[in-house]
Image 1 (cartoon, helix red, strand yellow):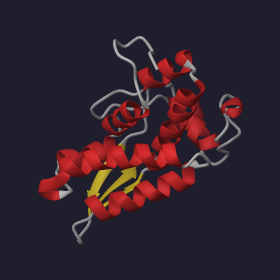
Image 2 (cartoon, helix red, strand yellow; image 1 turned 60 degrees about the vertical axis):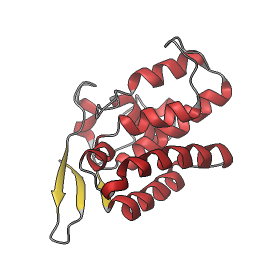
Image 3 (cartoon, one colour; image 1 turned 90 degrees about the horizontal axis):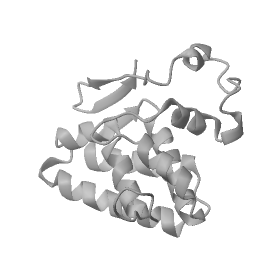
Length: 175
């Protein structure tokens, strides 16, 4: 699909961009949590995630998030406790849907919302992953237990902190 970035993009390109924009995942890459084969694991993960999404048409966010969490645990000894796996799984699935539908305008917005190299996704993307529905994002009734988050400006991404436990595992926790 040509979205006006100089070259047509594929699902593989989109998945790679999602992983490059995921702060918790980028922490695992930068700190070589996969050992000497971290870069190879990253390439493999991009490929296998693309294949999984393409070959599983009824894939939902929770299943993809659980699958990714298991890979992060096995390959990087990384547990992300900041809800980012749910958020970014939703982004991957939304991108795949937009590519299948050929929705150029929305795909361009989705692509631009992802900032590479540890950037944050927009507040709208976090809201859509929490609610699971695009038409409920603006009413603020989805998260009754977190009303303050709805009042934050879109430029205020949720911060994460990294905690290394006694057992050598690194956890990403929401502040």
